[in-house]
Amino acid sequence: MKLAVIGAGLMGRAAVHDMARVEEVEQVGVFDIDESLATRIAEQYGYGKGVAAGLDAGDEQGVVSALRGYDAAVSCVTYRYNIGLTRCAIEAGCHLVDLGGNNDVVKSQREMNDEAAAANVLVVPDCGLAPGMVSIMVADGMAKFDRVDSVRIRVGGLPQSPRPPLNYMMVFSAEGLINEYWEPCVIIEDGKQKTVNPMTAVEQLEFEGLGQFEAFYTSGGTSTLPDTYAGQLNFLDYKTIRYPGHCQLFRPMLEIGLASRKPVTVDGIQVEPRSVLKAVLDQNLSFADLDMVLVRVTLEGDLGGVKKRLVYEIVDRQDTRTGLTAMMRTTAFPAAMIAWMAAAGQVEVRGVVPQELAVKPSLFLPQLKKRGIQLVTRESAIE
Image 1 (spheres, rainbow, N blue to C red):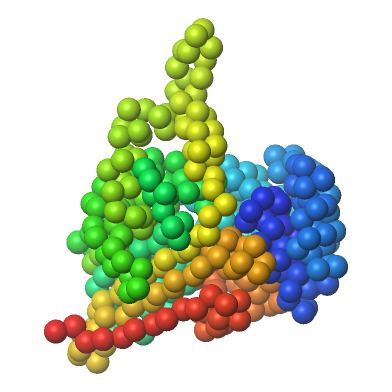
Image 2 (cartoon, rainbow, N blue to C red):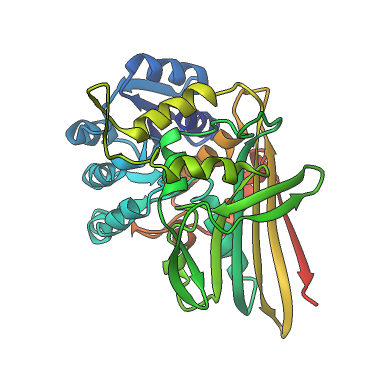
């Protein structure tokens, strides 16, 4: 089995690490626009299986050539490349998994479903953490009820020791963070899809032993779930977890236009506010502190005439032995897992298919434990 990773950044190197440790995998291709970086990551995380090459993810003919001969690939580059990469994977006959993060991009990818199916190719968008493996938890939970009334997804990547004033550090790309904080959010309320504004509806929650946190609406986390479970749920939403006070501090920066792509003139030079914000976040919030990832997926519904609550919970901390952060582990490992599952024939469907429909939870969820990601489930009756 030969697997490939496009993009050798933080998530890419964690994907390489995970793929190379699978016994059936004989080669891991590492592709990045910076060939020297690709080479270094292939050597450091490929465990003797890595091969590297320079590749511009926007060069579609180059991508097709690179992917020929590979069974499956993971896109670890920014979401704006994923439409083109989907075309490339179909032409190359290579299964593709991506980290996604943008609803409009996923919609465009899904329009290529028939082409992918005809080419015997599987494309699974929006994998990773959230959007990502939380969708498979939801699918698992939905099957355990006679009827589900509500699904609430809460996820956050955080520093273990917060630094003021924002009590946050960059645990993934600034572009992805701004997208989540800026784009509309899709939920289900009263059985109907609706759009709500990001960074609203702040709520308080607690994780045992860790204290109090807040959670608020952000974009992308529900991914394809509102479409997949249309007509089956009364309520579905997704909120991002942060330390208390983060939303109140960060939201005004967006409200005054710092996430806008519309240029402003500064000393006679046209400057995009969003580019400035990205640079400032990367420069001032990129600490080498230990991180953690919190996940809580709560389903409520009926089973055998009894109202029940089912909770899936993960608290994952940075692996100091490998140097892989909790965000790298919980984002890249699930994507890499689905790629090798597709290559191994454990995902049988073809086309552009959401993971909650493509991946069997009974095969996927046990793999988390093998990687040291501890998933805890709790079931209780609702009084």
